[in-house]
Length: 330
Ligand code: BTN
Image (tube, rainbow, N blue to C red):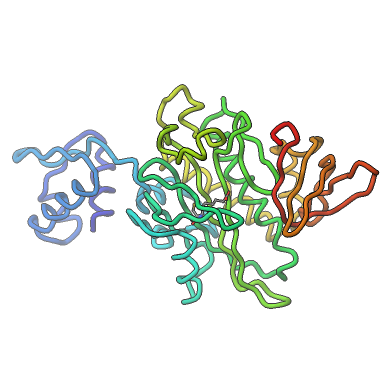
C-alpha cells in the first residue's frame, strides 16, 4: 500500500494529489490513505498535506527501501522484483540473515540490505564496521549450477560490480581492486566483500555475496584502529554526500549484467573486467594464506581467478585464497 501511494505521488511530480483520488485508485478509504501517509512520514518521506489540494511528495529519504531500489532496476536475476529485496533498519549481519533465508529456500537473486549492522563480518574472521545510514551493507543470494571449485570468479565478479558501480556514479573516482576483492581508493579500503558458500563436492547449493561500502562515512565513524587504512567515497568526493540508493541500485544492475554474462560465457569476461580494474598485478606483494606467507611479484590471474605470484627465485605459485599486502605497505 505504501509503495503504491509513493508511486502515485511520484507520477504526479510536483502537483498535489487529493486523498480522495489516491483512495479511489487503490480502492481503499481516505482514512486508510491518511494512515499510510503518516507511516510514510515515519519512514522518512517528506510529504506536504494540504486539506484543500491534497498531498505532495517533497523528499525521498536516502534509505535503501525496496521500492526505491526497485524503481531504479531493470534486472533479470538479481532482484527482478521489489519482493526480492528485504530491507532492515538494523540487523546483526546481512550475510547471516540471508544464510537463514537460503536454507529455507529463498530464490536466487534475493537481496538483503540494512541501514546498520550490529555484527557486520569481514574476511578472515574480522569485523566490518557498519555505522547506521552511512554505508551500503548488502548481501546477494546466488545459486549457480557449478561445482564449488569453479566458484572463485564469482567473488571477483562481486568486486568488479562494486567497482564498476562506483565508477559509473562517481566517474572522477578511480577505485582499484586489490586481489581478490577489496576496493581501494588512494591505497585505503573503501569496500570489502565477503563471499560464503554452501556446497557438496560437485554442486554449489548457494553462494552469498556480502558487500560493505563506506559511502558517507566520516573518519570518526571508523573505529580508531581503522582510521589510518579505511576511507569512504564521501571523503574522496570533497566531503559531498552520495546517494546510497542510486549507488546501491547501480551496483545491483551491474551485478545482474555480469552474472548473467557469467552464466552464459563462463569466467573469462569476469576475469577480463577484473584485470581492467585491478591495482594488484605487476606489484611486489606479500601474500598471507592459511599457514604461510610468500613474497614476490603478482604476475597474473589464472583461468580460475587464482593469483599467480612469481617468487624471488623465479618459482610460480597459484594462490586461490589469502590476503595480499603491497610491499610498500609492509
Ligand atoms: C572484508 O573483510 O573485506 C569483507 C567485508 C564484508 C562486509 C559486508 S557488509 C554486508 C555483508 N554482511 C556482513 O556481515 N559482511 C558483509
